[in-house]
Each structure stands twice: as structure tokens, then as C-alpha cells.
Image (tube, rainbow over all chains, first blue to last red; front, side, top):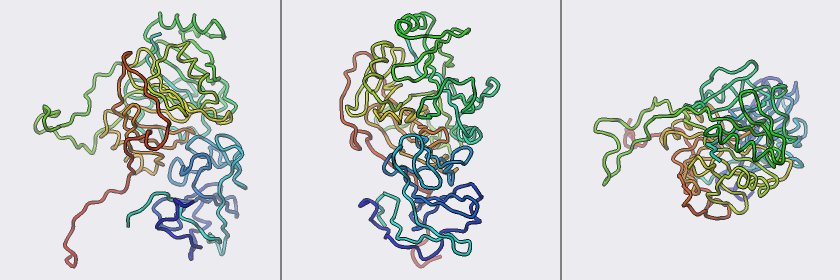
Length: 134
Length: 313
């Protein structure tokens, strides 16, 4: 992860990343907790539960997963899909079920709901690999 | 064998609405298609057919679940088609449809088809540039920067497969279909062009484990670097996910910009690819950042320097 340690520090964000109500049930949404300019994680909502992962396909280093802003799911929204090569992942535990990453899993982000808000509960490392000049 | 290049890719997708909006925004145009199918074409009529993943009209899927279900190669004439039928019938079942299209599997298990190419002949200008020391590419008063240019993909350029046995796959196309190796990444695979196409590559492959077999990306040729930048930046603005680019490759010299897609593969814009004839001698290199690209950029939001001096409003 040394590439990720440049300008942005690893911290537990001191504010929620968003609200449960911002995500339609069964849908996904990307977030940029450290303000890096890119969605470095995403959350999938199932009813009152949320499942959060880094926006990094375990197949290729640095591969972002959506095909469009906030679109991290397959057609019937039963699984998470990486739109780089179609790998499918279990929503609940992030394990790859089909495609290029079999045997690998998405990198989970520890989150919890407090009064309808989504909080990251553990130190969050920068996810955007590019070195920034300012 | 006079194979021209890929004419059509057929996909079995699980989110047709997403795929249709993606391909339309990418710049392909929807054209008439049989019931249950949607066809999106480049300016010369090459393109993608989409069907629902469970459509019985589709060839059987790969076990890996790749959404690519069929690659259709265009050939010059009936004699080429007959030669392919004779060659491949020696060791596999080759189905012949009523319209003469041939269908079989290649040695990696990909479903492939051959037909007399349906490509429409294009007669379009290249990107025109002015360069000191050279005759003007554009006459006086002809503007180069056209924000509203259509920037549509012109033709299907190349396909890149993930294959478990690169040599077996490559040898099928080289030995049986007479593709030519233009260059090779030793640790990935060879760049191949068919005999009736001088493009640096119509076919490339990357060696992977078996469970990955499928499509790495597919590319369309654009008019030139400017159209590529314009089309790609429009995609970014609409919220699509840039995967790699814009940049310029070394082998092939093509400008590139790759995007994620709901078809479960990268889709690339490319421009200004090298042409090679039979005099060319293949180069060999290991694939790594230094050999894969001459340079690489990343899109950022539009911005302009200037404004009032500090302290002034």
C-alpha cells in the first residue's frame, strides 16, 4: 500500500460519509471519504443493512469497478459486479463468485449506521494511487 | 486467407438497458436487428449485437460466464470463405448457415463465425493537422477545434481475449487462418493481423488462468487523436469510469482510452494505428509500463489559468 500513502493521511473520518436514505434499497453508491477526487469505496444497501468495500477490484491493482458513477451491481442487483471484466462478488462477504478474481475477495470497509448515517469505524487509507503535486 | 477483421461481436448481457445506454453514449448507433436483439454499429456497419444472457438464440456461454458469446470475422469473398471451411472442417465441426456464414469453435473454445464482410466502405477525411515545415493539413480559415464534432467510432478495430493457453490459441489463428504476428509481448501474447488487413493488430491475447477466459477489451478506431480525446472526455463527463488513458501505445502506436462497461469488458477508443505489410519484422518485448505506452495522461475537469491579480476582484 506504499503507493497510497502520499498526500492523504490514513484516518478515521470524523463525519459520516452519507445517509442510508441516500441509497435506494438494493442499489449501490460510491463515496470519497478523504476528498481524493474519486470514489475510493462503495456501499450496497439491502433493506436496513449496508455492506461497504474499497473501490478496487482484486484482479488488477488500481482497477476501479463501476461502469458509471454509483453503478457497482449486476443486472438484477443480486451481486456486486466489476465492470472491468465482469467479475461477480457476494454482497454480504465480498467473495468472488465468478470471473477473474475467483478465490479472492473485495476489501471490506468497516462501517456502521448511527441514526441513519453511515460512519466509517476504522482507519481509512487513501485509495487513489496517483501522486499529487499540491 | 483473406480475412478482413472482426465484423461483429455478439454479447449475452444481464442488463440490456444499461448496455444500450452505454453503447449509445460511447458513440455507436442503434440499427435494425432481429427480434430480441439490439445492434449497435460504427460508421462502417461493424458493431455489437446484444441479447439477453438467457436468449436461446445465443451460442453456449463459456464456463467463465463471459458475456461475449460469438466473434464474427469478415472475409473478402466466397473463395476465402470456402478456403476457411475446407481448412477448419479437417478437424472440427463447421456449421454452415443458410446465408453461408460458417460457425465453429477455435482451439481455445471461443465461438467464432466467418462471413463475407458486411463492412461498408468508408470515404472520410483523416484528422488534418498543420505542422511547420510541412504543407498545411488544413486550408486557411478551416478550424481544427470543433467542440461539437460527432466523434463517432469508425470501425471495429481489435479484440483482446483472456486465454488459458496463449500458444495454442495463437497457433490456431497463425497456422490455420494465416494471421501474421506483428509484434509480441513475451509474457502476454502476440499481436496478430489477418492477411487482408494491414492494421498492426486485429487480435491480441493475454495468458490467464482458465477461470478468467473471456474478453479483456474490444476497440473501435476513431478519426484521430482529437476525436478520441473528445469522445473520451464526453464519456467521463457523463459519469463513465475511465480505466486507462488517454495515452499512446508503443506496439501499434495507437492512441488509446479504455472504459469500464456493463458488458463486462473494457471498451477502448483507439486512433492512428500503425500499418504493416509482409516486409515487417516482429519486435519482442516483455509487457511492463515502459513498453506498454509511450505516455499516459488522466482526464481532469476543465480549468483555465488567469483571472485577476491576487487581491483584486
